[in-house]
Length: 247
Image (cartoon, rainbow, N blue to C red; front, side, top):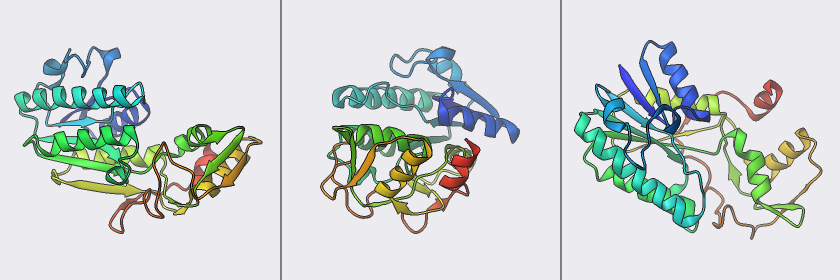
C-alpha cells in the first residue's frame, strides 16, 4: 500500500519510511525538501494521489506560542482537505502523551487544536500518543536550566526510543483506523528528574539536577502521572541504558 509520510525526512519520519519500505509498502517521504509544503499546500495533491494512508509526523520549526499554533492549524487544515479530496482511507498523526493535560503550554495547546481538527474532519483516523523520545532528554535539561542548574519536578516519566516510536507509528499506519487515540510508551517508568540526572552523567555534563516540585515542564505544571501513558499502552522494547550503550 502507498503511505505518504509528512515530515518523512525527520527523525521519526525517516524511520517510518524505512520501516514501511522494509515490509514491502510504498512509503513516500514528504517534506519541503521533497517539494511538499503543508503550510502552502504545494505538492500535496500530487503526493497524495493514490495514497491509502497519510502519516503526519511533522513538527513546527518554532515553538513560540503563536507560531506553533499557526503551524499546526494551517498545516493540518491543508493536509486534511487534500487527504479528503484524494480519498485517503486512513489519517494518522503523531501526538504526545498527556497533551490534554498540558494546556498551560502553548505548544500543547497547538497540539490540542491539531487533534480536534482531525477528530472533526470526518476522515477515518488514528492519533498516536507517544511520550518524549530518549533523544529529547538532553533538550529537556537545557530548557529546564536556570542559572546553570537543572530544575525538574519528581514526576513519573516513560520516554521511548525513536526506533520504537517509529515502529509503532508504522504498525498503526498499515492497520485499521481506530478513530481515537492509541497510546505507546517506553518499557520503564522512571522519575523525570532522575532520568535527566542519569543522562547528564552519561554525557559528562557537570550540571546539577535539583528536584523541585514547583518546577514547570515547558511552562506547564505537572501532576504525578501527566507524562505517562495509561495501562493499555503498547510498550517499546529498548531501555534507556540500552539506547545509551548503542550511542
